[in-house]
Length: 296
Image 1: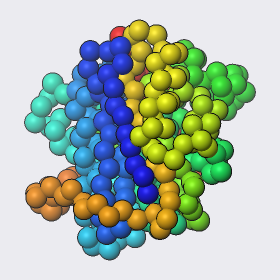
Image 2: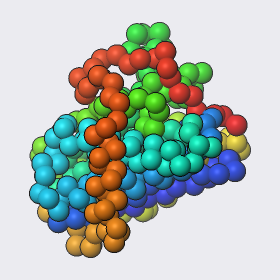
Image 3: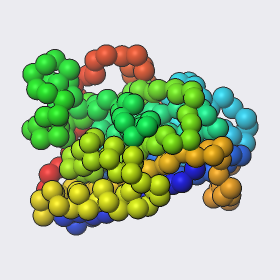
Image 4: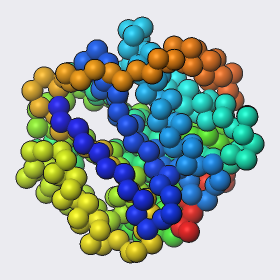
């Protein structure tokens, strides 16, 4: 398994994206977040969500929990949501911070993905797109209603208005997808909207079909992005996983020394959090309380 990532500021002053991964007991968890630029505190929200998600993953692996389930992904996202609110409780100036979050967990030939927001998860087989996650945005809802094409989402005026995020007043369950039969030659790409707005599916497919090194594939895709993006383009982040062999990692998990105590506290906060009733099978989102990303 070959992993590489990039995260760049683009034409903005600050990078509100965050990307990382963790490895434990032959299992890898990747996470990407995109803080909502229109809301003060969103830079911390993205980083907090990713770090909390990876802590929750590590602890679950140590306990031998069933991590390939919608119930676990719901717990992981609730844990990240609670971690953001914990910081907000002691730093009121950050109270508006929100973020997208996309997570994928892989072990052997099994994978589960989950997301909230418009940070996309792409899965490729034989150099072709098998699936990609559904954006939680007003633009995607417009496409689902037939008002615009799905390709038009990239440039639609409501593309940055999100219907689900992590860190808002109420927790909403993520969408998730479980995949069996992941095999050598498959690829996973997780990327923020600042990346997929300018790098199209055809570009991704071509680079993955022709490439054998994750870092070189990202370099080629970044060149395409830079050639198309305006000077004031958004932060952009992408992480790619190329599957090969037995899909195992030889790396050691980078656990924080205080994971156990921090996890227990945040997990309790997550259990006490307010929950909205959306689940992975929902076909509609509540657009009346959408969050907007800044274009500043």
